[in-house]
Image (cartoon, rainbow, N blue to C red; front, side):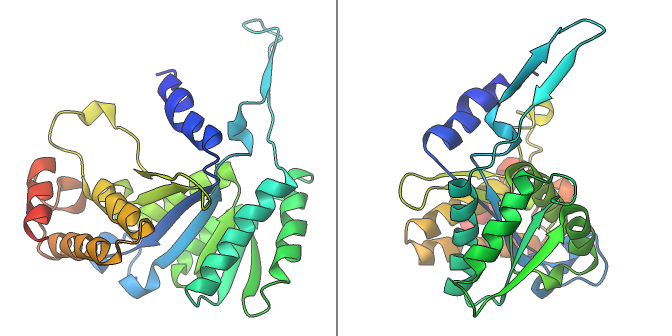
Length: 269
């Protein structure tokens, strides 16, 4: 309940291993999984680059007069030019490598006038080195609206830590829920760590109810990162077959349990 495990394990790994790219693809396998009507797999196919080592999650802040009627809580959001520049550059490099036409940066600079002003300035500066790629900006509330209204517009989204945390959960819904959402915590120059977007879901632990597909797709992402593209593709095709044949858990409209879905996918490899 106190989230000590998140601070001591996950956030510690992100900070100490400098896993500054939180890479979260939003890809719809089948239109039946998307709650937005008339959206097909080709309409929901983009990636989010979430800055992973700065922002409000660094733990800077404190209390004054804690547990009194006059209590004050301070939570600081840290943004450095180095941190902002490298995540924005990573997003542009990904777009260029995959021949994607547009990078969208999202912030709340109209209210957060210092940290997010830095994001806007660095985005403009870095973007000049990529004249072949369109630069686009959305305030975060407008981005959330447009992700639902026209997800097909987006190719690569880059944003700060907390905003990225929020909008990628929204993106997960577009592809069928958190049980379908894979992610990687990546240091392009060092060690990387891969995990599904969802948490550990203690209320359903041990009940054979959890959807294992996000974890399986995360394993495929890790293999792709390690240069094992063919093996990653085999896993992705097996997952797609499970969805097409409705060999899935209840959250996706199926009747199988965690083990049965895993066994089905394994049998198709």
